[in-house]
Image (cartoon, rainbow, N blue to C red; front, side, top):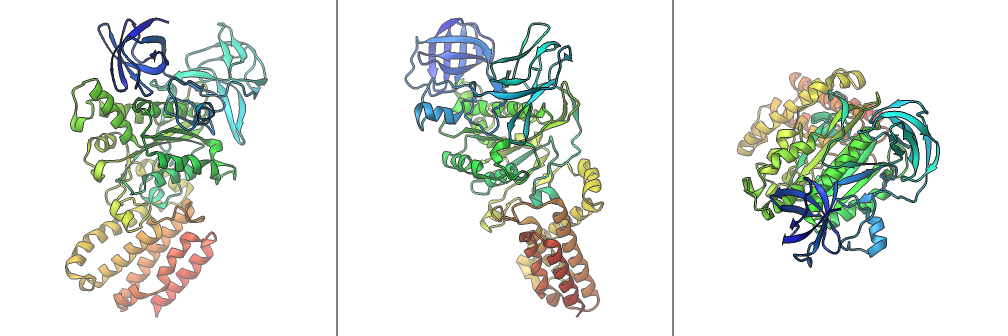
Length: 574
């Protein structure tokens, strides 16, 4: 390994001389061997961003170039793990040094002493290429971890064995002499190759009515959740992690407050997976890089997360990646950019902000992985924390250019205790056309029509509320008073959902469809009653319509729904 010396230090940015690395090579800085990555080369000077606190190091200390880019270890043992931004397992670090991470400490991403029971499915003499499945290991109960040939290798298997192995032991050989192991490494900044990218034609079912009905996301799609402080971004992402029908969850806490991340780290291991009844952590990887951790590692944490997600995608799994929050990631880039004395763009962010965000989000997708005919997907859901809730700021705007779903969280709705506080007038999804065929086939043929009617009633309500503020609701024509009553039912029964209620926390598509059908049936009955001479104030005052909200909290909702709709019909025929 070639060695140079430190020439200059500016916070997490170190300038070194005497080495000739390539871009993005990992270097070891100072006597404590702090980890850093080359981000700029000018003449004989090399600029390195350091993933650890640089206080105390001084010019003249040694710098060693490893000649390798930043890589993550990919193999059995990723699930249930809690990592920092550069894939050091936090539980292992706690044992080594207590509650605060000291500098220059290394720990491998996987447990190198644990033996895994490997069952080979490939045989001696098989021709394999990058991404081919060699066999599997039961990583956690119910999750088969498929052992893959590294994407950059191919050949004929000259030997392969089943049995108990650590991730370092050789399980087989290719005819070119390459040793096959349970693990392989992959550079985080390079997307893993695929055979084919597929159209996003299946929804990622989240169990959240507002999202599934009005603003769906496709499997392999991208969504942004921008919202001001306290509007429920983290709870929304945790709900998606718990309930979305992805096989694997990768949750990246990127620059969030320590106490918020502590909540996630404490709560996730306690959660039960609704599909299997086993702990949710069995299919989750957590990456925690809080706001008080070194800023450069925050920039790397997003890439670490998406590389792990792509690895499980290549096994044929559907993966949901939660990034909370990309604003803090952009702030890390801004801090490093200013230390590099680069020309600032809008609001001090680097000029390449949009490009970096696009590169990250473009690693999503529904694909046919290399070496298999299975289908896998990575869906990316990124939270954005615009200062003061200003959606016109650069990170939100750059994110909007590359995402197809925008769930705008509204502080006013949160203050009114309307959760999830997704504003139905400013949010949108560009996937409904592509997903319509799936809904027709799997839920109901009139799904798209119902959603369209819901949205038009909510938009009509917004116009009417402006008039109501001026003249009061009694001055409205009677039919419009009915519209307001129906819109209120949509808001309170369909759009509101209690994340902490054991039944209402998750709502399947069939139940969502029934709720939409019932609200529109009430609308039709109310308008018919108006036509037959009943007064609007009598219709609005009927008590049975308010019982529709009870359906949200009941498991056996169909019987209750039949009773309530029967009473509504009875009251409106009087």
